[in-house]
Length: 173
Image (cartoon, rainbow, N blue to C red):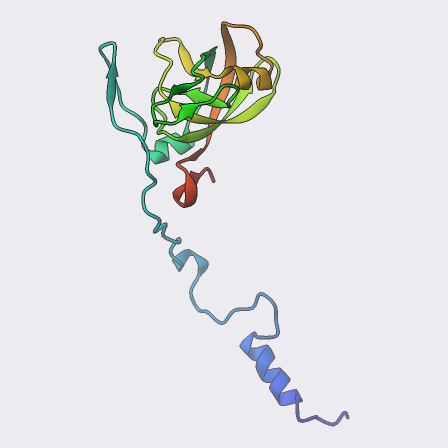
């Protein structure tokens, strides 16, 4: 028979308490009883008020809708360089930006070319296109990045990645 050391009762007590066992817990609650963490961040500063263009009223999506947004359709090129976008930001020449009718501004979307399979992340910071068949206007830099070099329209898939900027940005989970 092995003699019992002074530390043996302490070790047995720690094992029983679950301290030495990784992942052990001393709770009687089931995991389903634990409430989901609450997002206490303030609402991001977004431009999402309704607006009217050419007699058509547009109502931007809320954050939850925007984070679920995914669509396939026609993209067109637009040259907004050295002008001011809907957010009051200068649209730089050669910049990666886009315009969308109903996404909250600013948003970040992944634009994927249907024909080439190339994609890139783009900041949506302007309103448009105001042509009923088009779903997004993209800058020439975005068009080059996805392999769409000529003027006209191109089939793309759009998927929202995030809404807002800075510490209150909401990202897709």
